[in-house]
Amino acid sequence: MKHRYRYVGLTIVVYLVLFGCALSARGDSERTPSPDLLFEIIGIVEKNFYNPQKIETDFPALKLACNKKLQGISGQNEFSNAVNAMLRGLNASHTYYLCPQDYEYYHLASIFSSLPEIQEVFKQKEIQYPTVGIITETIDLKVFIASVLPGGPADQAGLLQGDEIISVNGAPYRPVESFEAHIGIELPFIIRRTEYSDLRTVLVMPKMINPRTEMLDAEQASIRVIEREGKRIGYIHIYSYAGEEYHQVLLDAVSWGTIKDADSLIIDLRYGLGGANPDYLNMFNRKVPVIVSTDNTGETSTYDPQWRKPAVYLVNKTTRSGKEILAFGAKKYHLAAVIGERTAGAVLGARLFPLSNGDLLYLAVRHSTFDGADLEGSGVPPDVEVPMDIRYSNGNDIQLEKSIEYLLMRN
Image (cartoon, rainbow, N blue to C red; front, side, top):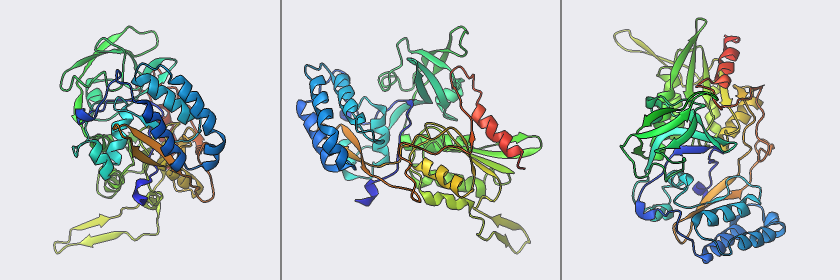
């Protein structure tokens, strides 16, 4: 079924957005999957993986190593680690095993929620999860906030990009486990804002929300105009592109909204999910008429959904999947400048397979090229490279600042 294959990717960083929904579909770290589950996963991979040559040459040794690791396992964590090590050996994006204690389990399920088999896993219930609205990255065994979703609980509480998370509610941060029993209750985050600063406590209240809705709300809340040197620079952060509704927010913003009259535009594609369609680049097509309408009072209105002024796609190592295709097209055809870091190189088309016990297997099933270019494993190098270390950045975003400087020079 064609609609099952999408260029949807998760960030390589860890979301501090925690997933829950129908708790009957959840498991926990104490459960031990049946040994038969490994053989089920192996069967799906051998039948559906996009590269049969790798299955023939590489997979036998990977299967053997995984089976040895699973001898005498004591729980879900060990099973997940062994299976995902086997899958990583295939060197393919969009290929991993997920159980209900993984945050991606719920996020991917929400993207593919229209499929009957996914609806069955969640007993026809809406997929929701508890979230504080931050994205984290683990560096040298320390957890840092990489991005704060605008308008979310963490944003309202004052957490910043670059904060090191020492603990949550007195325990180490754990995706899912940290927040699932604390919806609507303020939890103490112990953080370090700069490398040698004292620890501080920030109270944050998790909320329950559909993951697709959260990303849409964050995108809408991100829209603003940055005023510098007499110029107005529009800004929008698209955390997820896994649905046309996310692109429509952008089109509405440039057609009718806050950034309609800006002198230039920054579209932030860092962090979150891919899923964008290449035809979204049509917003930069200048060969589309502008409509100016006049009513019987003489009042006029202008409709122009195209962006005809300087623009930047802001990218980094977490920009993946369909977002990479946009960056590739914008760079190749000079539609917008690409600024930041080389993208992830994760563009394989994937399918989500429900397993017999309710777990999920996300598997690369299709390889594609883009105008003959193979982006898998290589990514898109930016027009202007701006490396960034988010650790202890105190909310300062040098990649965004460089994008602003670039646009000011072109206005």
